[in-house]
Image (tube, rainbow over all chains, first blue to last red; front, side):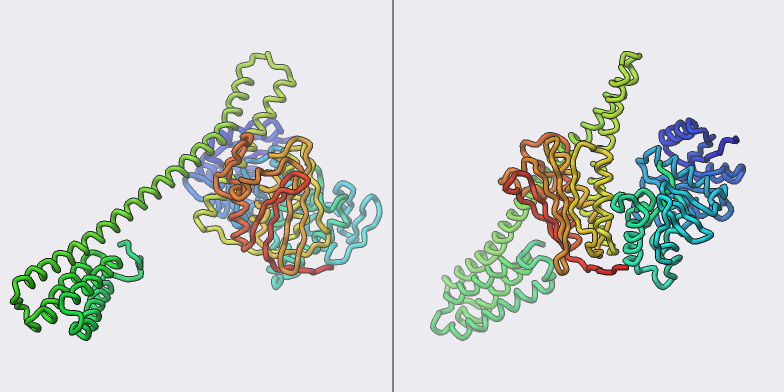
Length: 229
Length: 356
């Protein structure tokens, strides 16, 4: 199998080196860019399967690099930044980033996000049935089984779960979910979302207080994860 | 200029008020000059000048001193309504009045200047003291983990195969712990500077306390597995409307502190309740509690307990207090009778009892 190529755009040499070692040891091939300009040139000459982008670049704001890339580049982009303010994260996700990780990061987490971003971009998520641990979601029949038994979900609960599961591994912002499930008039009604997520967790998680599939991204949104890291 | 009405009265207002005061006092003196005598009037006018000297800058006071001298001469010293003074002693009195009024004005001004510079000096000493404490505490708390990382990596690099696998594992564990701690300290410093700069404005959103607390505990347990943390929160606690990130930092710091500063094997209990429109959270441990004398200081910036083991910048609790106050709430600490400390956070909040 061909190695997937990952472009790392980060001005810190140490970070690039570290990512290089980590990614190569997990069978990716890596190209490094130290500036926004260099990164954009690389990306346009030879579009990589995935881009890891830092927001604090010396020659250009990372968010504008992201917006520029998104005008023509459709492969996944993961932001890896020291900035952890929710506004920045939400803005990056709304600007087309597939995922957002803050530094310092954990390698296991980074690799999981890369795998999931690559999986969705390769279209492997078009399955009719998604298995996530003990869960089995059948998108065709709109049914969910847990440990082989059908769960009783309301239609909102099912829609919510299906939305998350179809975006397996991706952070969905509160606003995105509210708009998709309840409609544009409800994007400020975050209490609905909190309540339904709590309800849903009681049904699909082994321990709703320590969720394994429907994870919280504090202040930003939720992420569905079908597999353990 | 520094005076009793700092910044409220500008200089032209000062001239106006001091002149009006002199004129008013002179007017009153006109009425009582007949039984007080014109020399008595001089004392009352001097009193008015002194009052000006206490309140205003040097130039308005000088003007009122000169004005009052002129008024005394013109309206009171015989022959009245002339500048002319006949009696020799009155000439001396007039000159003395003039000199005393000016000295009075100048002296009062000088005393106030001296007071001001003394106050400034004292402030400077205080801020230097705080600066020292900050530097000491910071350099210690940042250097300890940095030293650990440097020593451990050095050891790993130069050991030439003399380290057992277990030793290596241990060193790597030390590096991980130290860098985690370093990250924590930087986080606290950033939060503090955000608090101090006043740019921090709460962003209100609906918050599921169970989700929040379990998430925090999971994060802490990932890094320190030996502590036992118990959560006692009603699963159907209403959603509260608050700044989730601030509340998260408050709870994180309290629980993390409790885990760090209690003896191994201690227990930490987290409970949360709502009373009408107040959200209350209690973090209680069964460690050794706080020295009673220091309880009121623990929320101060950079304050560290006198006989504490190393490991904090003295920032964690001041951030808890700062964030709680930003959310219009409060935090308090007391020792429990069975030993251990109990932190209580109370935050006024809207609640939502929405259920599906």
